[in-house]
Image (cartoon, rainbow, N blue to C red; front, side):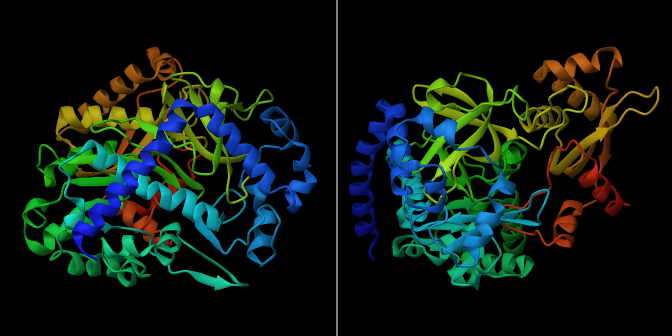
Length: 504
């Protein structure tokens, strides 16, 4: 297929899709309500639909009263039945694929159902929308004159009982439309290699002579790959290898700790960074403006959204609200109902709305990945912003980090203990710690109150991790590659103590 033909197809789709996007921008709540009723109608003859009498539900209020909110543990039995080949349990069309992701408190892995509808109307639709938005904002873009370097997971698909499971990226590549394969590198064969370390070098070898115009992948693992590219070629800048590189589409983890490192190896003033918010459960939001940290919530991908205010989350007063009731700058847990049969499902993420016309969000963290042992409500967003401030002042660079509480013992106050792997360490770790502590105080009033005169919390305790510590921990736990990462904040010491043992 010629580049002009690809450009013509892209232009046609762009015009058609923006008419649809304009509809949910003007009538967001109506689009969401109609979507919910269509999902209910489509699934009314399933086992789940009959159990909750979907046939008589005709509004959100009845739906919310009748269908309970559940996490993965609440869905696990039904999902396992579906994995064994049973049909029509919670979704009427056969579920052939299950995206394997990191586990829960009761199982090593989660297996998220992926239907034909969620593939086409959510994941692939989002990929096309992402390109549409970027091209609309950048008229002189030359994406289709080259290829996109994609970095996905490292698992093959494993088939059993007529179903298959693996990383979401493996499922997406297995079912990828021809136009995506044509415009991507490396090949599917290399993309799906099992051994992550061998795969990284294979990607380098296959891509360094391509005309790469865009990057797509998780920031932490993409940075490892790009540093390997520079090491292999002996170059200092990626633009020496791929002079037409113009944009990086990233998601999976926060970009904040990595931004400065990317700017060093991509010294181009008009280089673009576009963030996405996607997970095994679905594709939720896309950055729709240049140089923005806000994400447009996509309302017509077959996902109905609800939100639980974090100040009542996991309490007796817990109650979800629809999109129409959200408030600006408040922290919410996300609840989804999807076109793969997850009904009122807790995905474990938290977001803040930065705009309600249109609905734009920022990802603020995870419902479980925070520290709130002493009433300090420290979330990942706070931690990453504070670390970035300290790094900027000390010219330090961070590879990865994790933190956990030091619990009170007798008269001894509590504290937060941090393990940080630096690419470029600060000259004075005590000065870095003081800057970091003060930045946390400025970002989080609860933390500041607990730190006042050391009333509850002593100053943070920071350990410098050895080189490749986090990589080695992930490898030891069979979690190299893809979207795997060490939880950055935890109310327990499980992760931190394991890493400290490995750091000796």
